[in-house]
Image (cartoon, rainbow, N blue to C red):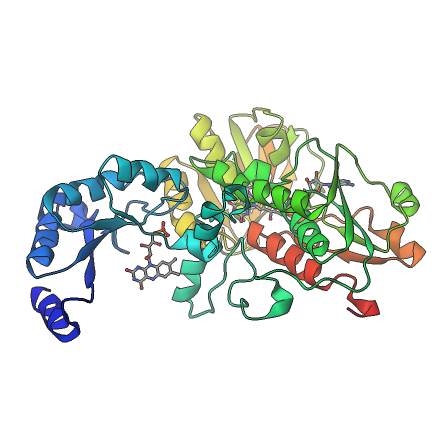
Length: 451
Ligand SMILES: Cc1cc2nc3c(=O)[nH]c(=O)nc-3n(C[C@H](O)[C@H](O)[C@H](O)COP(=O)(O)OP(=O)(O)OC[C@H]3O[C@@H](n4cnc5c(N)ncnc54)[C@H](O)[C@@H]3O)c2cc1C
Ligand SMILES: Cc1cc2nc3c(=O)[nH]c(=O)nc-3n(C[C@H](O)[C@H](O)[C@H](O)COP(=O)(O)O)c2cc1C
Ligand code: SF4
């Protein structure tokens, strides 16, 4: 390392700053990795070799502790930078979950850091520094640490950001990175549903000059993200993009009507040019007769109902797994999770899936893949897997298999009004799909009469 630094310095001259990124805390104690003190030695050596600044990292891909997921509180790793800074004289910088400017600002004031390094928050919003400078922090599109950008690299897929669909399209005018071209034919657009899909669509359509009204049946916006935000430590960060979308809508002049449930009759009277159905998913009602209580994620996560201690969760995609995580964190549940496909959590970012599965395993949750619910009896459930049936003593059924729900849809079609279905209403998926669906439709809506 020292020879490399010295070689580069000799090549570029003393006027050109050369820094190096080194790991401050490997988190590999279980495998004989370097301790903090040993790592700090490498920073001292880099300084000795002539490095002009040091970038401190934490963990390796092999580390078995979470490093950059939401369960790691923002600013958690700053003491590692502080330890490095105590040991060297040259400037020290660090990224790693410093998602809001107040954190590095405080760290710099306290002498833990010299520079704020930012990776994912700048992917989510490259205008972050400009917005801070202009006191427009509430307009910063916030990174939600989902790590989908990261995961895509492993699958050799083009990078994608959950919360900023314009990533990779910055040079294309229609994608609106620098502002959207105004439509020549403004339309009256009604959006049904104030979840991420509806809000994102409304914000983009309004920025293009359409007149947009969003109807949300609840008093609060956010849709299923409100449930997602209650699952685990740090999950409340999922509400940050909802707040930003609300701000975007407000600044773009979207009329948001909270606490108003759209019905087909009402939609007929609204005289919209185009209707967007963004009503989200519903949890498939049980097709079987059930003598046992049946609850939905909404009953538990929004209305605070406690399910029976021995319950079966029907559906092992992200929703079912999150529900199990929420419950085992609340107390001693004996849960069995049924997933009809051979693999559970296929829709969950790998950065979260391994953690969820390991927590569920440790908490004694039984995961049965390739398995469906066959019958509900007073004392439990009969499940079916590969032609074989098995009885499980249970006291409750928790529904976590989502289906799209586009209920007010026909109203528009009857009148010949163009109706679009986006987000989970089209197909239950994840937050990034809802945001991307909304954004794309917002870019295109009203285009038929020419823009
Ligand atoms: C428990 C749980 C955990 C999850 N965890 C994650 C996660 O960690 N990461 C992730 O990426 N995704 C997660 N998801 C999925 C994510 O929340 C959804 O994919 C996303 O919210 C879908 O957005 P949407 O706007 O399409 O629908 P929704 O968010 O469901 O919003 C639909 C909105 O429409 C409103 N509405 C419905 N009918 C009407 C009507 N007739 N009139 C007016 N308003 C109406 C609803 O009240 C709701 O506010 C989770 C989902 C659940 C249930
Ligand atoms: C898509 C992506 C690619 C990355 N590639 C590298 C890399 O090549 N080398 C590296 O040291 N870190 C890489 N990182 C890690 C970041 O530099 C950064 O340390 C990490 O994301 C934590 O900082 P943050 O919380 O500000 O995102 C990458 C991160 C992302 C999201
Ligand atoms: S994909 Fe997720 S982690 Fe990556 S920058 Fe976007 S919001 Fe952040």
